Image (cartoon, rainbow, N blue to C red):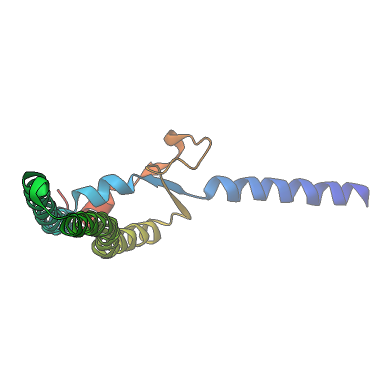
Length: 170
């Protein structure tokens, strides 16, 4: 009876070793794939335009501040104290508006970047899944995000070429 149990255990280990060796793993650099997509280049152009529009608005506020600050410095000696305080308050408000706009602009820029990037990343992810399923891979590791402590790259297939072909990237 003990011999039968030992044989069953040995067979189970042998089968599990074969199953593990039959599993297929792949790797890909998703950042590289995404950066090569034509949609990414278009997204960058749109994002640069959006950023420039925000920068232009900031510069307009800065010009307004500089103009009023120069006028204040030029005329402050002849201003009544009440007018001087009013002008200083106005300059402080412009400066506060500039800082608030700068904060909101940074948030808007990040939101726009995420909004434009999401469909590109989804398309790349869908292509990876399509290639992985078609080739029978059980896992595809993104090597652009170093979360694995170790992996043997020679034991994994790089599917970048197949994904590029799926996405029609040269």
